[in-house]
Length: 361
Image (cartoon, rainbow, N blue to C red):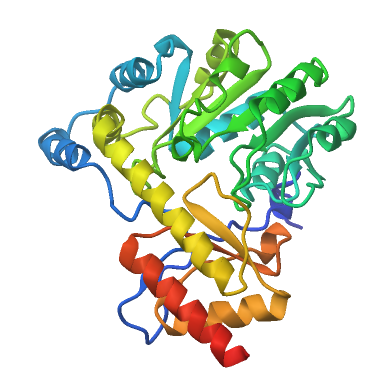
């Protein structure tokens, strides 16, 4: 009899499904399924990657001091209260690993990032799904779901895949009303797409129970490098650093991220283009009878009459070399998530949906 068994919760994990990247038999494919920056990374980040190649035989720094200093300088934060990870996903994992265990509960909303229940189960904790209201986070529903076993609450703001956002006052109300043993995690992967939004810095500051996370995978165009970071009270950062592996980020990734965060002009360009094309794409599809909520991200969540129409449209888009994301796994079976691409990509999406709707009429 085999007595080698995994820890509780691990075999309950459904493997994460990433965005599709190719269509068999179709050339000239545009990938709009993973919310990647269509303009790529900053030229300065590319240059930093090239410059790092001569030092690949050297171990990277263990404290990420230069990157943390750059993040702190750009965002006006204390570098000592910043932790870096392999994507923001790793920082999220640190939080669950450090603060939740077997029998504890981890709250996430019904349309929240699908990694949250996976991270909970990795620690043996129980994921608790809370309903949203019309694709909007419901703070009162989260508070009502809290019990003595709750240890972590995940809040994606702006949301993925919903693209919606709740006000900072609501986030602060949630943080202040949580039971004393609960950590609130503000997952801000799409923060940079919201003009004037700091990702929750003001909510973190002055409180002992909040951590915010950010990523270099979206507006910075470094998804292939896997770099993210978190900002929290010093006491939380001290705990998380004890379980962070010392060489979790490569020297090349650190160099690319530092160059990217310092290139503010490039970030401003990407934000402005995304905002312009996001509005155009949403308006054009709405005119075709495919509405979406006002988006605060680099994607829109378009809604169809039912699941069958959403899947049929997805199939047609694929036949035209356009890969978007089905989100039935996020309890949104009648919707498709479409990354805002460059001007040509957006035009192709609208033309394809128009042809699909015309054929279906």
